Image (cartoon, rainbow, N blue to C red):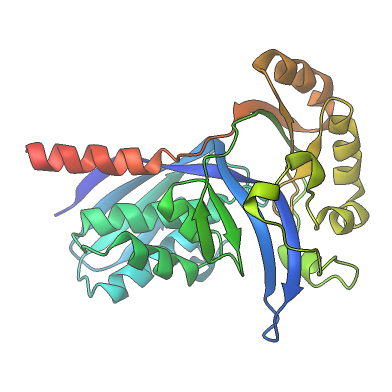
Amino acid sequence: MNDVSRDWPAPAKINRFLHITGRRADGYHTLQTLFQFIEPLDWLDFTVTGDGAIVRDGGLAGLAPSADLAVRAATALQRRACVTAGVRIHIRKGIPAGGGLGGGSSDAATTLVALNALWGCGLAPAALEQLGLELGADVPVFVRGQAVWAEGIGEQLTPMDADRPWLVVLDPGVNVNTGSVFNDPKLTRHTERITIPRFNALDSRNDCERVVRRLHPRIATAIDALSEFGPTRLTGTGGCIFAWFDDRPSADRAKAGIDAHGRAWVTRAANRSPLPGRLEARQSSTNGA
């Protein structure tokens, strides 16, 4: 067997806003957020094997296989579809780890979508999304590959054709523990729900920001610096932040002004992930063979 399929994309994401609207009896928080896709990307290669083993080549240092979302995604799909084949997964990381950009969730989604095709599982997209939800609240968004308005605990998804601003994304180099933010007693948990027509980026916020600023002064300093150039938000629980602009030159000027606060880059928000296109290319190639 040992067939290799290369260059499956796993994009980063931003949360244009993040409102926490409640907390359920089981401890999960309910929220509202708007997901869009951005660069950079991780790139995944899959080598299908006949031994049933699931292996990640060159995994992140200190990350146990049981905590590796790509390995967990492959294992979950293998069990769900009763697959006897295995796979070797190689990931070329471009997304900063622990920055609130969804790299692990995106890798898991790309693994589900790619192996569903490569293993011939035949699961419908909705089934892949449900499998992804068991791995993490963000995974179904990446499986779908479409910008969405998310509610509930992240499982209620409405496709969006949102505006696509230019962005400056700044990584201050701080790894934020998500659990410490959501368990903080001072976290805002009762923001009033809004409707999609009422969404305005300037009137929204990230409810995690106040807690993150207090816990991580370096992120607070970075937010203040980037805010000098344009409206700025934390993405997820951070530590990456972003500001948005109407045009590329304005974004370039802002990037030049905040390089001292960490790694910064200019990109543009996207409503479609490159993952569906890669799947379509694979299917076209297979059908034409």
